[in-house]
Amino acid sequence: METILRSKNVLINEKFISADLVIKGEFIQRIDVYGSNEIAVDLGDKKVVAGIVDLHSDAIEKEIEPRHGATFPVELAVAELDKKLSMAGVTTMFHAIGFEENPKKKRSLYLAQHQIEEIYKANEKHLGVDNFIHARFELSATDAVEPIKELIDLGMIRLLSLMDHSPGQGQFKTLEKFKTYYSNYYGLDDDEVQDVVNKKLNKDEDKINDLINHAKKHNLTLLSHDDDCIQKLQGLLDIGVKISEFPLDLEVAKFAVSKGIATGMGAPNIVRGGSQSGNIAAIELVREGVCKYLCSDYHPTSMLQAVYRMKEDANLPLEKGFSMVTSTPAAYANLDDRGVIAEGKRADIIVIDDSNIPKVVLTIKDGESIYNGIRGFKL
Image 1 (spheres, rainbow, N blue to C red):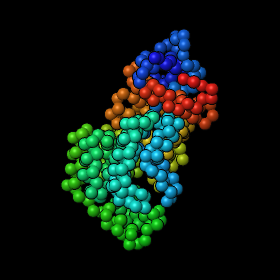
Image 2: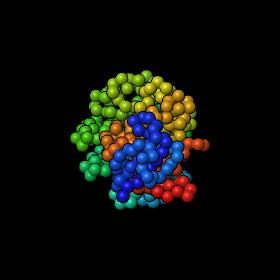
Image 3: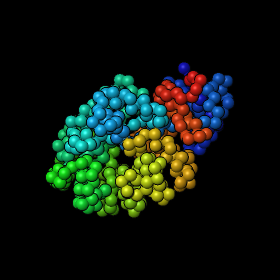
Image 4: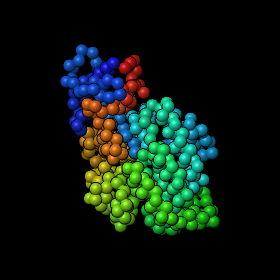
């Protein structure tokens, strides 16, 4: 059975053109001349683009605990978030699951493994969008090495990021800044903060290298996190890191790009006009051409809005903006079957009404409608 979508604004090869889009089964069968098919679903001038690919989001944590102390079962949270993702136009999600012992943030090695297993099982059985795993390994949490290796062997992890939130570097350039953050944000007393400091500074390089080599053996993309200096980034480049998430200043981002390392920033940073933690505004990196893709970080609905904000605040054409949330992240995650509208690619497609505040009105995953927000419309 064929489904034909017709629009005056289909994004193909980074250009909006008029076209009839022919879908058969899970894939785009062909792209026809606009109006050439006798029967088609006419979407008028609504924009038709590839589904959003999100490489990093910990939104699942807020779905599990939307209010402090009020927790919901992981399996329920996964199912509910999946529906919200379809409404946001995210057809491929990488849940960023943190492997660290942080009770105040409801993170632990056990919870990380449990969340990954539940997401993987649900994705195999009933979820609407593709829910994949991006494991975030805190370098001091070396007890996580073996559990992560086992999950990699089971095919449950597709991306691995290396995080170092120890004091004196990264987003905590001084010990005092680190202590103040953990004291105020997590409500820790002096002894509890010192215990966190001691754990963060305790790293087993042999175990870290063992995990890195294991990830490479399985062809996982390696990412770094909160890079704050060129020297640190050069070291990460030497061990095979391909993506720098959230570089903390412009020079680091420029260096990364010059060395062929992709740079990713948070879409909420773009939409809100700056970083919540006082780091560099992502729009500055966009203006300089050194932000290669966006992720939702913690707020999936920001992905679409950020595309339009970049046009307004950085004069970035919508076509380029959409590539930063579709084709570019798909390529970095080695997903060559999606991220663009082209013959033979997966029919992961979203329809956007931007006559007012831009919003997704139709989401198609693998050729099937999983969200329909157009009144009186049937696919």
